[in-house]
Amino acid sequence: MVRKLVDMAKETGSQSDGIRSVIYAGGPMYNADIIDAVEVMGPRFVQVYGQGECPMAITALSRDDVADRMHPRWRERLGSVGKAQSIVEVAVLEESGAPVPPGETGEIAVRGAPVMLGYWRNAEATAKTIKEGWLWTRDMGRIEADGYVTMVDRSKDLIISGGSNIYPREVKEVLLTHPDANECAVVGQADAKWGEIVVAFVVSEPRVSIDLKAMDELCLSQIARFKRPKRYESVEALPKNNYGKVLKTDLRARLVSES
Image 1: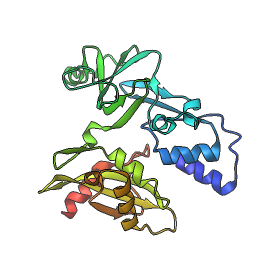
Image 2: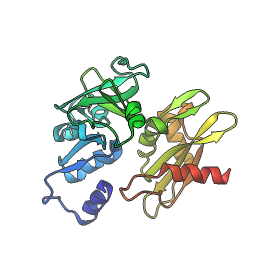
Image 3: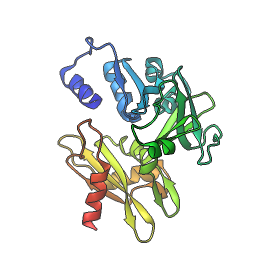
Image 4: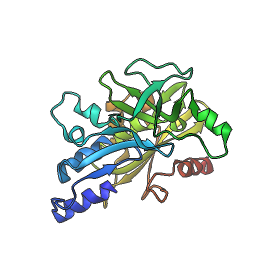
């Protein structure tokens, strides 16, 4: 939705004077997209992180943080979901429930008044999700020493290739810096040798044909070789639900049907 707003502002030359704030949620925006949005529409953007079990109330990245370009770590902060909101505690935990050190990856957990009491008539699911007062979000992430929380990816989206963990978001951040890439999605495909391989589905900018070889060279220059996609698919559009989220299950099913 923000991408469409920005594209329309570019086409019309609008200064977006009628919009005071744009609050985005559902997942952190890719740095390339939010940088472009602020450049075109100005400091109007605020990010909120929550989920149905703790609605809109886990962390927030303020308007000032989203627009800041002076802090030495502004890019890292822009890629985060901000700091814990005042009414909750946020932690990153390992499987045992122990907190991981700052900067290391674990599962994001939250506790406080906005957290649900439990799932309706489903004690088993509640026990798996809420442990000792902490709501385990199933989002993988890390907390830096200054309190900023970075969401790495959903735990179910993790790709394990050759025994190494690969988070699709890291790959997508690189792919979207290519000037011809409009959207992309990264999923794992079952592979007899590696367990899984990384596959990238890429949507080009209108009336542009993407040079997939150049995109592969970009990945090789920005991330570890084992993380780069072993297969690229140029597609006209990505399958999405009514909320605009990419249906990765459909992409995985497509890869299964082709194998």
